[in-house]
Length: 277
Ligand SMILES: [Zn+2]
Image (tube, rainbow, N blue to C red):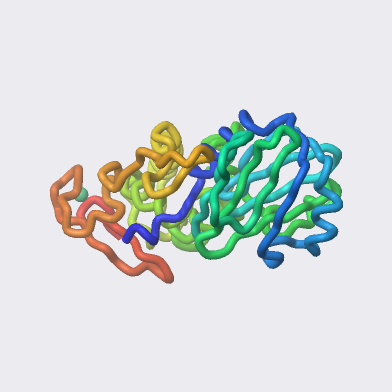
């Protein structure tokens, strides 16, 4: 059960914020890429470009971490199914197991150990719009541009099922199969509801549910099964879920047992009474 819990927007937002506070302004001194297939360019070229670059800022979009470097490069990191992305202070022993490491001129740095697979792509600012994996990312629900009006526009003329829409990173970036469960429950929507049948009022509840669910987890530091930049686990435990991963437990609204159902290629946890199709 727990292995299904992958990092989504809250976990990535927390790490990117911590990284920004800790490494902005630092100068890249040493790079070690043990797994060349994580990179988009040959290791030697990667090292040549990144050495001596200064970190301008770190932010996130959806499930991606954007590390903006001077001058004019971005280091784009995606943790895939999960990873440990850990900071190390000067003179601190850094993690033994890692696939990628950057040390700065002050001897602090960070190391990444992927659980399965992930991406570390170095892209010039001018090529950013051509970077296939991030160029088409939709709006992150934590962005100012994620307004109710814009959300309604995104849904207009869409024909598919609401859960598929939410999981498609081109529509809304950062929601995955973990948080989507409670988002749909809060909005009282069945995962297979066809978008054209959803009322304005339901869209409004869905919009509010996305923001409240993700922000609640950000406040708790993300999932308890993921580590932040300092190796600390989040406080969003299984108990925090309303219906997600709660098969057989009573619905928090009506006490009907929660069901786990198959929806397309993913599993969904629903209250069969509150989330009618
Ligand atoms: Zn219910």
